[in-house]
Length: 292
Image 1: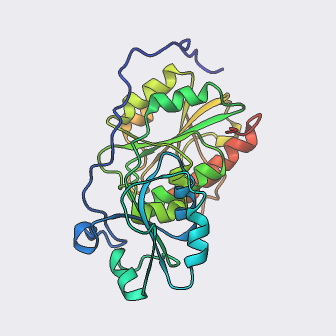
Image 2: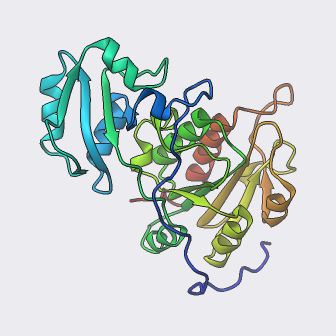
């Protein structure tokens, strides 16, 4: 039997603070600072990430830069855009490859598309919980403990979008900025799934429990497979870093620990792969996916 969860009630806590991401510099795939030294803008790149950003009414953008030959497609994408444009001049700018590459981190896979944007407002946990109240079927929220690689965080966001998760919560300090490499790995999911930057992950778990969620930590040494656990309709999936796993404080706040059905010869997966498999297990085991 599951332990009794306190009844749901309106929280008296102050909501997580909103505000733009104030980090001044993005970093490239090697972790080198590339912000103001390479470009004064905040860039999303790749066709899919750009198109979903322009379709997001919460976005504010300045200009779309493309390589020669893609002007017509870019104009067709900009015309119906619901994202709010800031700044003057032509919305679509065509650059040669050398000038284009100077805008972005070295080695960026941009497909000839880059959008200068303002950072999204930080998602608010209370907003996520309000959205959950009208969500049908199983609701899943992910909490990432010390997952700092932007490729992994972006890939987890992409899986969260694919499987209908309601939000991804990361630590305010230590998590990568929502730009560049992370946005490309997310392939547009930043504009679909709210990413909450919590000052304190343990308190975030407490708040989710108050809202009726059951918290399950993913652990390769857990006695029970994830699919065998009775987690109800509101589930928090907690994932730790590949090196250290879940920290003690978060582990103790989990109602359950579950493992994936991997073989003993190779029991662990990359954290982003583990997140994708776990989300599939949770969606398959629920009475319905989290519909938007």
